[in-house]
Length: 433
Image (tube, rainbow, N blue to C red; front, side, top):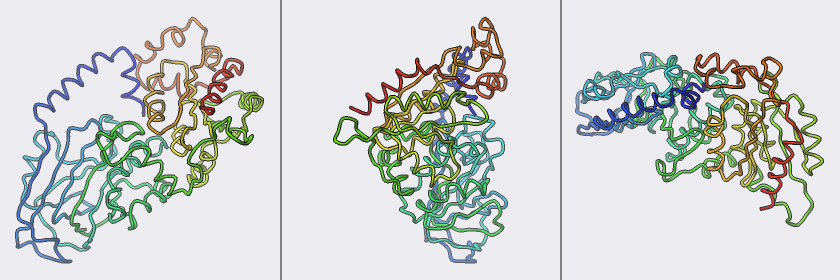
């Protein structure tokens, strides 16, 4: 999950940077956006034959760091069971020469080879098959890929890129799902229905040939949990959060402003975790926060987004240990505060990239609390002079699985409530601005 990010935080940073520079240098030399076209006579009817030249236009980009994608217009056909997209009159060999590939895996995390191992690859062919089902609207084909069992990756790799890719169609678009997970489609059914007026198709199981007047394969991803307005000038994280607020019927647009009329107390949501990275003294934290003037809610992130999004939206401050549960900041009202508790072990850059920087693009305030050795459960397993405390970089050099096991999978937090009190006071100050 975090391989590429954690690696950049430690000793191989320079080497990877050099390799990345060489990689992108090669891409610049062979910058590859390909366009092919032939005469067009409109989409074909059901069972139509291919005896007349039909225009097909394809624009592909393989230079983005996290995703490959193609946009096609004309007579576009797909046979899902063979993972083949049929487009007449273009050279597949020429199209993929510089990409050094034979197709596209439509999941927006191509820099992580492990993430793509079980993602279905779609190839292109000039051969044409008769249509068995004709569609009057274009389609977007994407994968419910390897990491989407994780809540953060569901948003960062699929939901946000899908929004920027498909919102322009105003619902007049058909989604084709590769590597479909029933649990995922149930969880995000509200989003899918808001973006498309049509029931999504599990394309992997389709034996018939579906024909479309246009297709986008792959989703363009900008940054982790973010939209870059330079890349998508028509959309921003503000737009996306308004979309979520409308989709899930969230009432609050703005967080409480302390000092204004009324004596309402700000609401603090503490994200609870049960298996790892848990707060070992949740009740103590809650009591201290109440004394400072907060109404405290302690809750574990729920898979029922419709319910949990409303709880999050009702709060003014959200705090939790670094983890997927913090993804729920997308539902916070504007000007709310995120407090991210950062684990011991050199994961600051990871915390900033995944939640710190994204929160600032959401019109939220951000605070970071870095725990000390004494606040970590690791102190119960290792002496203070152990490499785990003295040199986290040496632990990282033993490989990602070992590093993850030490610092992410087997570390809990017992906050020093007197030390943490300053952070909560800062949050109150932010709510009064």
